[in-house]
Length: 102
Image: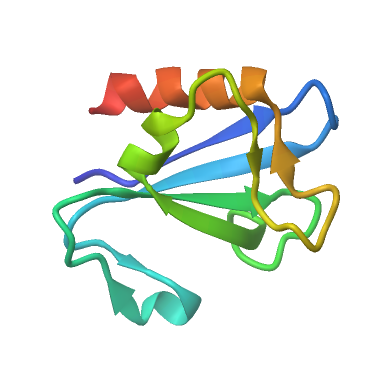
């Protein structure tokens, strides 16, 4: 699978998020030390304010199906940091992007 990532700007928070898709067999994690051995692709979220990796600061990872289960709701990526949530509108944009890949 090709490497997919795309930047989204959340209109509610004004934050830029890089969304990265990890397909089956692709490497991920710190220094790419892990491999997605699931048949389900994963979706990672990176905060673009802090460029600790080429995509930003890693925040959270979900299976693709979990993203598509969201219905008219945002997603809190980390309950401990108020900024790390994505609005419902941005989740719908992300789902549209992911639909074009899969």
